[in-house]
Length: 372
Image 1 (cartoon, rainbow, N blue to C red):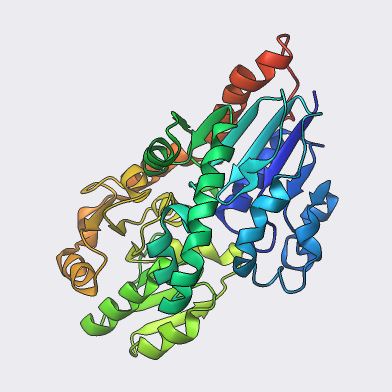
Image 2 (image 1 turned 180 degrees about the horizontal axis):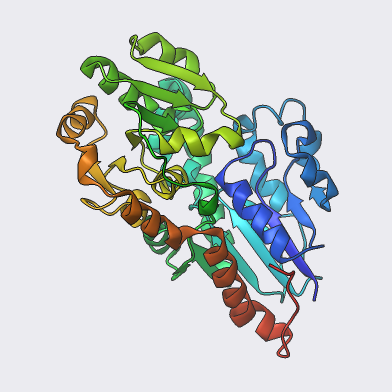
């Protein structure tokens, strides 16, 4: 059976790439179609994959800063013809679901409906785009919204990564979907015998992650906060941070289990589509303090594995921190909850779903998967 995998872009590693790596493992030998591929920024293991790029890959500067080129993505993806395959699986947050598949079933693993077009005002505000430029590019966003909806209409089956994304798929695309949570390697984490007194924030330092809320709240309360991760927002965050906030930069994967396990709690201040980090924190036995919304509603159990704050404001997070009692949460319950999102669960559910809606249509006798 000929299977094609489709991924928006390969110029940074994050949760979307965790999903892609698992798909490549489930379907070894399947080519990966992507808009562009920055080899030097991606893991060496990717060089063994059959990666096929669009003409966007040849544009200057696109590898380091792909956002200005967003209006061109529909043009590129609309020219990708995958009708010669038996099954197409897109791993989408942007425009890659716009490929042409002909009679081949198209399963879209939807990380989110394209945020740039469906949540335009929040996106441009988070990216701090000047007001005049927002007015200029809004007509483009409206045009891309129409294209995005038409592309979604050609998808045969949608999979959502969370209840929040499932609602967005229904609202923006008018489509039903099933939920298969993204893969998290929970077994690399475990509770520590002793816990420190610091709070932890970890992730890319970009505006929409709202790490500024955690930095300001902990600064004003005089609480120790460790901020792990890198990104273009770091200088701004450091400028507003007080002496109790420590910036760690990018933390090696080997050091993450101990960093999570010794934290008093993990803070998730932004509205996330899913977010792997709070699951990792719980796998390490630690509670989560999260904004009440988005994927956290699926991954955090209030009063059992974490606590919520109601509004994306410094004051709301401060109030939650002042109420927070780490001793009220049991590490074993957090670990148990994290197990629902383990990579083995993703593999099993994804395999079963694709067999049912994709492979069964083209190959009723079944197909062989890689050994898991």
